[in-house]
Length: 442
Ligand SMILES: Cc1cc2nc3c(=O)[nH]c(=O)nc-3n(C[C@H](O)[C@H](O)[C@H](O)COP(=O)(O)OP(=O)(O)OC[C@H]3O[C@@H](n4cnc5c(N)ncnc54)[C@H](O)[C@@H]3O)c2cc1C
Image 1: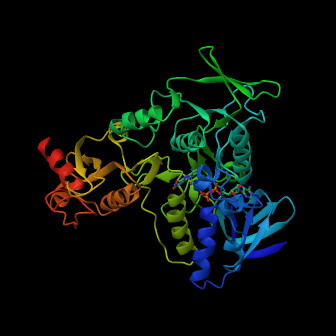
Image 2: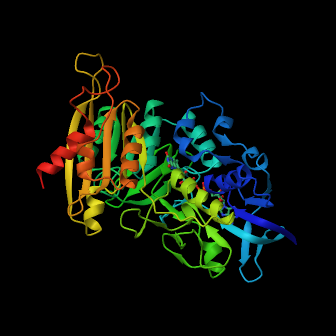
Image 3: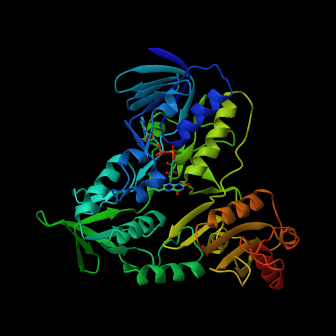
């Protein structure tokens, strides 16, 4: 048996960030990262890797991001953790640890629909999936995408841009409902429709049919059958918690349970990233939050605690952004619905402000919705949708404002920059106007 100071299971962003943090801080610890994917893909970039104009290698994460940062890399599968003896068993070896990090991520949710295992049905997660998508898209003319979350929509747009006929089937009435304010969704759906992406809401897939070498049939619960060359399954993810659960480590449906130091219920064992249960920064209650950024934030805290710095993680704000044709949109914190579902009394503010001075070319509106807790007037959420690719900066601002406990009054007094080509005119600001709108409703 080999003995290590730190063993990390999982080679996604959560695992890699810990390797990097321990290395840059000259920890001097012996670190081994065990991962079962020979080569990891950059998951966020998968939709944009489907066209074959770029080589698939560009979308791979080099293993040197582990080995160049002082860690040993083992490509193997961890099959058992013995928390008493502080050992990890892989298929081929046994390792002793002082600190163990569970960074096992999540996997696509595969509902028990008959035919879901057919070769013509692919999830969107791994390098293998990207390879399948590239092959299908290069040959196919028609696809059905099951699931209208941001991943399904990103894939739909790319496939449509490649000239395929695309149908998105969603169980809920609208797409993007997990992260987006309904006021914005309508415009996104209209854009998709205008571009020829067909959307079927309130529809459940009941089966996938093999069409004997002629693609797949996607059977809807109502009886209709959509024919396609291939189908894409993108209906969510489930955290990989089985290894932890079998070792007696506390888990929930949302992941491996941790304390604010990211420690699990087993001594010396941490969890971070998609496999770890997240708590909302705002409500402090368990929440979803499978984002690459959350994996990074949690892992930095794990690394600090391994180094003995006693750092806590304050919870996830779930800042996110996506793009749909020439729109970009995103949110941070709670949407109005999430806040109401959490039992919070809220006031919201809307604004629509031009992104440049009105006389400049290519002027377009920035639309913002802010959510404030009514009694404290604390900002607890915000969404932005605008033309062009700049929304992530708006979302980052809102996320930081939430993190800094910004109030409605703070936003009314917010000091910002202007320039005819780069920002709204001096009197106008998208956050200030949304805050003014909210104040008017108090
Ligand atoms: C198509 C797509 C687009 C996305 N876009 C965005 C985006 O734009 N922005 C964003 O913030 N997030 C995005 N995400 C989410 C982001 O990719 C994940 O949140 C992130 O990958 C989580 O990192 P992780 O390290 O926790 O888990 P993972 O990336 O899942 O890595 C975990 C690794 O552990 C391995 N593993 C599991 N069990 C074992 C075991 N027993 N032994 C050995 N190895 C094991 C897995 O095989 C995997 O390689 C996207 C995801 C997808 C699929």
